[in-house]
Length: 173
Image (cartoon, rainbow, N blue to C red; front, side):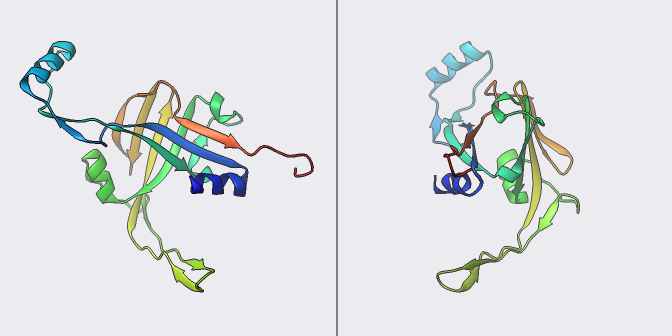
């Protein structure tokens, strides 16, 4: 929440992505009776264990979200959310190995200055890849290094982003 407020106070804009992570949460082991009920409802044989899922709220950088030109976010039809992730994250999340090409690989080294201690911290030379998360109100796709990791229907039926604007006060404009 502090990060969200920092964006709002610093830039006058803050963004969140709110959704459901089907891979998170507890794992539930289904007994044979529960599996039979699920099979009757879905017509498919369910697994012995299922993830229950969990809601999530992710603070999104103003500079990593692109939407339809000239429209407020709540009227947009499409978004692209740009993320940096490690190849290991891609494998854990999408069960796909990526061999980062030079176009998608970012080796970065950043240093932040800690004002209180007068020291540098935060050096990270981990290889990360660019992940593009495209979403319309109907469809979604996740792309990394030119490979489609996931594509399908938008599970929310709308764009899962919230844009909060700072309320202008007279004399502070």
